[in-house]
Amino acid sequence: MKIVTSLSFTGDCREAFEFYARVLGGRITAAMTYGDGPPDMPVDPKYRDQLMHCWLEVGDQAIMGSDGIPEFAPSYGKPRNGFDVTLHTADKAEAERWYRELSQGGVAGMPFGETFWSPGFGMLTDRFGVPWMVNTIPAEGWTPAQ
Image (tube, rainbow, N blue to C red):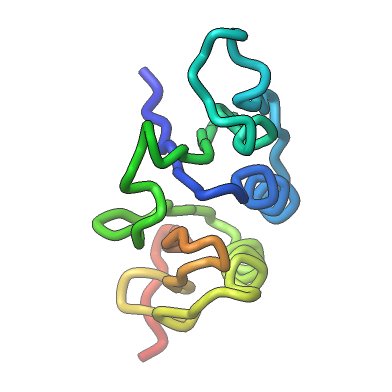
């Protein structure tokens, strides 16, 4: 089984996924626009170039995304809450880079730093409104400096 988070956007899904691919070192393997759908699909022409489906692979993980059309998904433009996309790595420098780059143009929630459970953890909302947690997995025997 694979559980994949699907993120919703209001016209900037492609930009967001290109950003995530660059930051996370992933690869977009699918990017289907509404214009690529069946000719009889009832979509306003102004949405033709927006993404109906996007798939980003990062290692053996993936994130899906799409641009919501108000007629089909009226809540897409509302603030996201109740979830975070969470990244875990044993490499503190990699985690800190992810945090720094994902934070650009966004809002830092909890600055990246050591916690009682991790040598490096931080929370942010990126410039697309997506909430993230970035966590460093501690090595065996690690204890906080505090």
